[in-house]
Length: 543
Image (cartoon, rainbow, N blue to C red; front, side, top):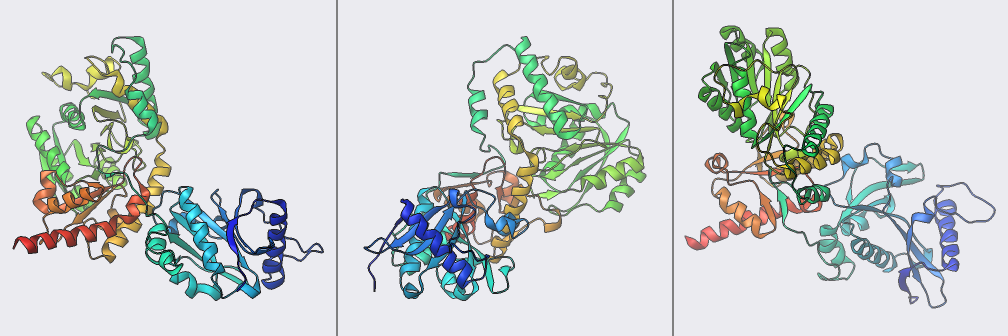
């Protein structure tokens, strides 16, 4: 066999040989491009390609492979919605133009090119490689750990199968097949990965804003900062106004409970999870007259049962949770708006796990509550009340701290406030792209739910009403959920498990909020299976 070495293309002479080999392979052998007299084919992404080549002692290029990381990829132009086919990942690259001279086919050259390119991709920070593999080599690609997806691309006589290669698969399968051994490519090292509904990973600009010197809540700088955040919230949601309260999301709901006293005599409160039940408790503590309407946790409401409750009570208002954080169920907001409009009652919604995670429109909603944490990915401590119309008249004897009109009259600063938290919220709102976040979380959650079910792990919410931001796992009864969460922490994963309502039901949650680690998410199902096995083994030893 001809001796060769694998390297990156560096000289003009090597690049000219690349263009010639490109022509010989993808014009003369595979009729993918039009012939030309110069017998030279320069790839359209040539300036962006990093070429991995095999050369002999004389400098002859025997094989090549191009590595490229800039979007759009070539597959973006062949497959609509390419990202919908891909697993969660931190950074993707594409491996293209794999070509080996006929005399060297069937040797280790092809595998050595792939091994070198994979190592280079890892060094550059990529964890997913995309390949359009010729249909004549599918068994080889599968042996290396490549996963086919989508339909074939290309033209008659030059068909290719889109595939991806994850780093884990390369280490576990490809590295061994390429003769690299277990240590041939370093496995990915993840920082402790947060998959919590709070705290979530903030943008660096948000962290920097929190560290700025505090300013007085009585000063003009503070008021302008608060006004900026309020305007941005109104732009995001089509709200008419917003109040920023110094406190948690629970405070925002307490303020709405008091405001409901000014919206009418009676109401209906919906509950199909922990936070709906908390609304019932808050309505009762506020002395409101209302009828609770409950569904089993994890089940969505039916339209007719809500309409019937409103008719039976003659309700003036309806209070509900949009995204039930405890289960991951998204209650149908359009349905709630439709019902409230027909019944001529005011709709108020808890949107703690909505804002920043799901598209949300205040039109048809009288009052909504949110917090600075969760989907907005700022720091906890700011309760938010959004208004779809003028604020209700405050009822007599409303405590001033719970009086929405007081917060609005003073531009959200009637009492001592934190400029640091408001500045961090401003920075988070400026970096919040709900459309992008929602689309990414939808793809990742769909992948996660399928992967969990394939591993035998039950997920709670039906797919039709499941939030992309929260996936609730029903842990097998023979393993305590807290033990599983602790084992996952040892593996570098922080999952939501310590709330009492989760402990009682033996549930664990994966929240996709803020700048979560997509590469770590891809490894999470396998980590869960390993943690379950470890928990069971400990229990067996203890028995």
